[in-house]
Length: 363
Image 1 (cartoon, one colour):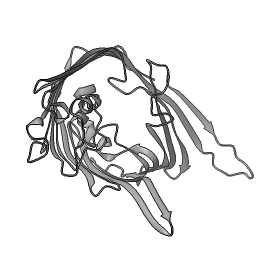
Image 2 (spheres, rainbow, N blue to C red):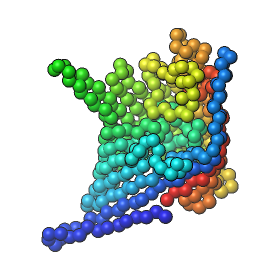
Image 3 (cartoon, one colour):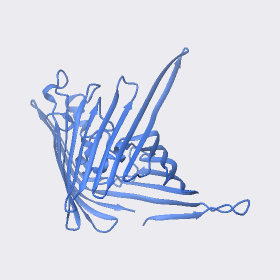
């Protein structure tokens, strides 16, 4: 059960000091189930496969727990904070990302001028355009898009999101996860990485539209960029989800279970500074019984087959996905899912299959 602790600040020193109301909420998501997955590579008489099955953690939502709260500072101004940690139900511990690695920030919030926060937090590509996503696991739109996944969190960042104006809302964030200056014999050398993220969205009734732009630079001689436009429209009997975007010079936060296998089979996994891709996502969701049925298709085509890059070893990635979620209560649901992908990771001959079912509980 959600637990909220409310405390009133005591009047200290003299009469007439207004009491400030503080709230702290403990929350979380516990998500696990059974899953089966198979990754196969078959090209030019080279074959390889990896099959796994068993308990899967964080399928529909990443398992987590956290604390969030606010303090009323008066005149509509509030101090806000959030600490969110990963959880692993299978091992009964946190994940390899220890501490509050999901989100850790503090800031100020006002209904009049918006929210300003500082810390480790989601980029705007995830916060805004990822809202159209209805897929899970390999069916998630971040398998095609480079800056829309949960892996694209910004460390050491400043983030500002405006209040809503007639359905519109905008945001901008800047982070510099690493700033290193080295001095040797009086000569300085610096490595300054940074990430700029901005987005705009409009939401009114059944219509949702958003656009985002992310740019991340480092000591490399190029910056990785991503832009995306996403939208959804609820026809009540059916909801349509669409997204299109492009990546340049790499893919931000690209998560992929098959990545290690690609490296073993083809000896390299480098998108390079000349890399370009065009990404698409189409999803349909509809109420079926008391639950929701989702079908989606994502596609990402690249320039890796141009010139002297990967040649005919490269292929366009296509992933087809379906899932069904059935609520047992307001906080607990059961679900089933399945995906099939070809050319995954832009590698010709790589195919992915997965299926599973699980339980999701929120508190």
